[in-house]
Length: 149
Image 1 (cartoon, rainbow, N blue to C red):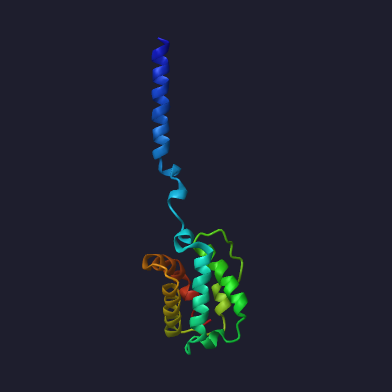
Image 2: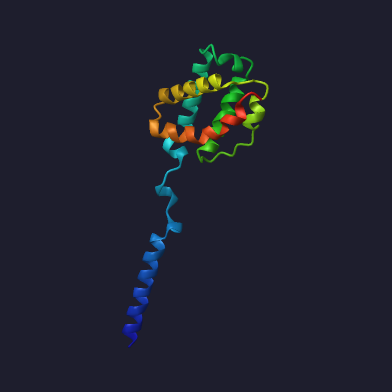
């Protein structure tokens, strides 16, 4: 009789264990890398930003918007922002995109041109197209807050 109870108890434990392992609420987040991890973490983000700054410095359309910028400050804040938006360990507490771009009167062509430069910076950093698309999809909602403020 005791063997039957022990056997039933073990079967119950095994079933419960199997159910909890397969439960969608118990998915191991380590098996699904964040965009921050997929992009290559801080070194890749810093490489993208360095490439972007170099590209902007040579661009006649966009450079005027950055001519008076503190490059070190820009790079630091953008690094934290991209880390944050890609689910990295950073917490962005800087100005909003609307505040940053107020008074710049950026039009659609300038915005689209900047996106092209950003894609060029990601290409130069060897970021794959699927990862680029994931990042651009996260940045896309900011578009309206940047125009003609």
